[in-house]
Image (cartoon, rainbow, N blue to C red; front, top):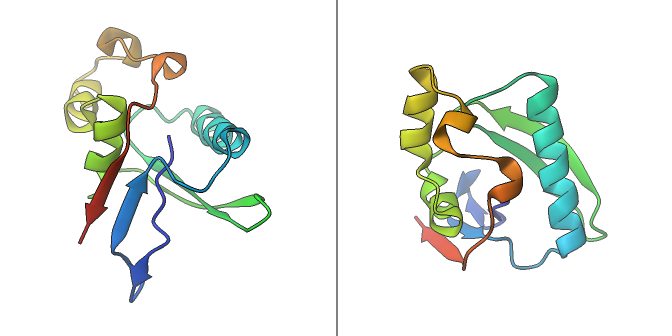
Length: 117
């Protein structure tokens, strides 16, 4: 799912929120769908973050993909109950998402989380 990292200082994230508080369910679905489609298109199978910019009208554009665990990963772990570091290590050792019992359509948001630095 998504995280909101709009509060930044000197191009560094200061506050990270999940789920993003000011987006509609429709926009959330489009962001997630586009991120998953991108990962599938490039046959990406490990932990990574697809980043988008979103304007006031809900339009979004791709800016980058970070093919690694980000320091903010704990915010995502809190709302999905998925241990991303353990999952990444198990995938790197040859297991599949299926082996881990992780199916995109089964992952749900549970609650909210915030990280401040």
